[in-house]
Image 1 (tube, rainbow, N blue to C red):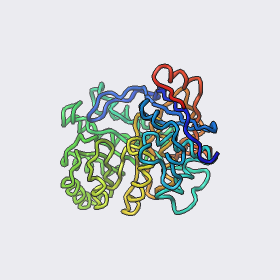
Image 2 (cartoon, rainbow, N blue to C red; image 1 turned 90 degrees about the vertical axis):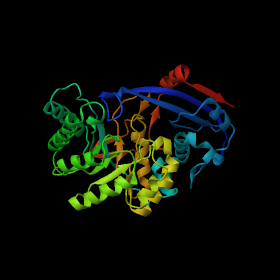
Image 3 (cartoon, rainbow, N blue to C red; image 1 turned 180 degrees about the vertical axis):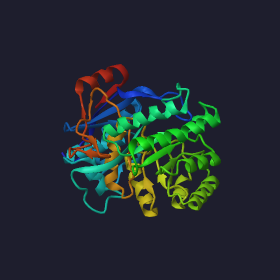
Image 4 (tube, helix red, strand yellow; image 1 turned 60 degrees about the vertical axis):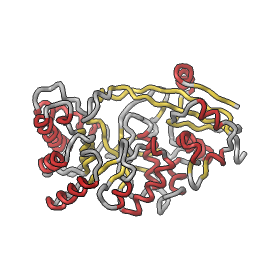
Length: 382
């Protein structure tokens, strides 16, 4: 059956846990230890099925029933606009029907790679777990030692790139104390992981222009690969910061776009004010990122989708890399979710090793998913 109808849609939310509780960032309180993963499984009339992260409503799911797969998804374009809420389970379903990993389908689609992806497929990633876990400590020395120890844990798990939350003085600590602690933490992490490895710092809009310059100047010796969301998006301030970086001989990049991004962010990327675009992988969708990634490639800018807290983003983002030449990193939010088997993936020497399995290479345990459906979800069927 080449073009079956969709006959069953099941939804439920799984819950997982991080290895340790995640602290605050410059804006928000503690992120906690729990990750919540809304899952939808789509089944076609020939019995084939696929699943993925999806927060669609019962009404949206009911509207998809009876639609032929070829109307909802095209191999060359991805998910059709009316059905983008189901983007990830549809990619998984189509790739499983083809018997190939999603990354091979993605490489053929809009913005596809210039050559066939190699197997085993490997993608650079970074440890995104270095939050403000130190606010209970009185001294910057103790704080720096704690975050450095967490970075060493990430190194032991296979990471060779690290993103550090900064901006403690924006909300949680007095400005001067928080800024000094930010600098001490960045220096301590550099010492802990050694020279040459990429370090990114993320202020979650907790700096202003002058604070950003100060922190970059005081951490310049250790090297910062990118500065993420230093302040609320402003092309005038970004142009100033770019000029200052050039004057200081600093080659670090500017990354933005994770949250409620400016509608003109891509214009700024085209014009060279932003080097790395980070739209959320689930909000922007896999299909949407294929198109955006192609544009960024044309402009010589980098792609690094955000997904923190989504867990599945660790895996689906890696597949996107096959279709985007200037893909930078997978953001890796370490977690374990009962019912979701991701054991085919691994992080070694700073690279995500993507399995040569159909779909996204993940397995869903029926018993755990059925419990999730009963407690937090729904089923619609034709």
